[in-house]
Each structure stands twice: as C-alpha cells, then as structure tokens.
Image (cartoon, rainbow, N blue to C red; front, side, top):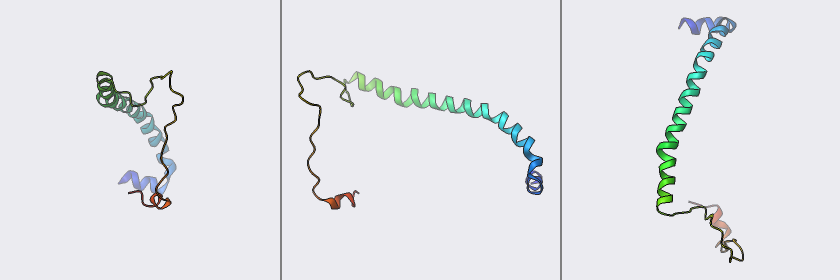
Length: 88
C-alpha cells in the first residue's frame, strides 16, 4: 500500500525500484520461458513426430512422384456462396 501511495504521489521516486525489479526478473523470465518451451517440445511435439515416423505417416506428402503430371489437388466448386456466411 505504501509503494502504491508513493508511486501515486511521485512516480519518478519508484523508477529505481522498477528498474531493479526488471533487471532481477528478466533472467528468471528468460529461463522459465526456455524451460517451458523445451518441455513442450520434448513432451508433446517430439513424441508425435516419433510416432508418425514409426507408423510411416507423411502429413505433408513430401514424397516426390516422378510420374506425376502435376501435384495440383482438384477441388469441387462450393455448393453456394451462402455457405461462406454460415461456416459452423
């Protein structure tokens, strides 16, 4: 409560406190960010990739087909323009 009152009276008085807290917490935030990103990668993304390789799935269809005339995938015409306005 005192810090809020001091900051309300004269915000420049809290500048050194603010800068000190930012200097102290920035490395902590960077460390936690890296740890969380590594955990998400190794616990979620990597196992999915390993399972896809084990089962031979290729969701991006990266295999070259030398006999293919084109890689274009034909799509039918939309049934009506109204479907764009009622998607769900």
